[in-house]
Image 1: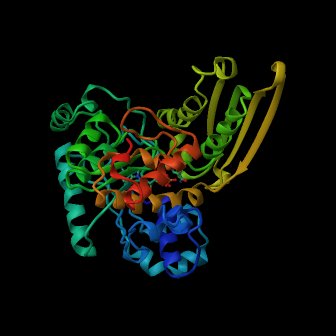
Image 2: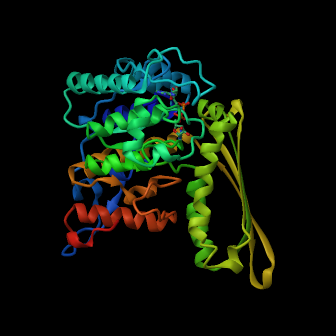
Image 3: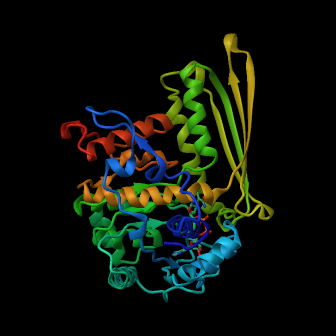
Length: 413
Ligand SMILES: NC(=O)c1ccc[n+]([C@@H]2O[C@H](COP(=O)([O-])OP(=O)(O)OC[C@H]3O[C@@H](n4cnc5c(N)ncnc54)[C@H](O)[C@@H]3O)[C@@H](O)[C@H]2O)c1
């Protein structure tokens, strides 16, 4: 759900690649290689190793709380060139959002003009069910994947009602305000056995009650918050510094971004959701308990500022205070001028195809092997892996298992 910068860049990008108007750079499912089977270990394209759905078979439907078609929304997002969007106009204009489920307690900075009337949670779930059913019929599709690409919601901590499915369903009946729209979409999809992927920092499908539902319904789920810019670099660099036992005294990260995501994050309650997920990685990688002399006193700060002139072209700065031989201090500075949705769109494509593959392969619940894509990965056993190379290995291992190149007994978490 959500037809903003990320979704429209993803949808328009897939249509462009289909027509040969661009390359799917950044999408491992399209350009990545996997080591082949033991008898013939040379690398093979991912799509040859495992049965992925073809880009030609994808159809798109969106919910939004604004009425713009995907074409209009993409033009407003100003991520992709107008000429490219105009070439795809007919197809993009035909994707009109269904009315979203809106709760002003969770998103304050958008004037919702295209949403269902305020009604109870159960009535909202019934509306989502209807939309999913009519999309399945009109698009003539067999299977679906739900991507949560809606605005970051105001921070909602995990409370008792989120910790168990029975309590959650009771709270649903009582219209408990601690149940957010993102949780409602996720709940409805899981009950229809549709895999759910949370691209946002909000607590949605990753609450324990919905993870329980995903296990019971035998549906795979993944999340949270795509790892695109600064955190991607952090999870590449930190394992390298640790591999050479260099100390880190502090890591100060700051960002400016000017898209609507940035505007929503200008709200302190929504920012709290984002900061929580941005802070997760370093501690997990550096293991200060094992290396107290190197990382025990690490100070990690992350700041995000809404700065409209930049639009989707975000800039992030990192100052890393590292410590070497005999405690002598050094500094590393990074200035990353990135394009947020250009980095995120290929991940949305991979996750759509891989969540569908996981469902067809009988996988259920949190998919640890998809941690590669997320800042704050949802995992089965509570032990997150953040090191990008370790995540990539988990990803390859699971694909090898799905391809039948490793014994089933070797299946991990
Ligand atoms: N753009 C990126 O590169 C990127 C990277 C990592 C994570 N994310 C996360 O993905 C999400 C979307 O990012 P974006 O840049 O597309 O933001 P965006 O503001 O451009 O788009 C979000 C869309 O969601 C819609 N929306 C809000 N509440 C809704 C609801 N209840 N139901 C349906 N639609 C709703 C908004 O109207 C808007 O069109 C954010 O949470 C962001 O933090 C984005």
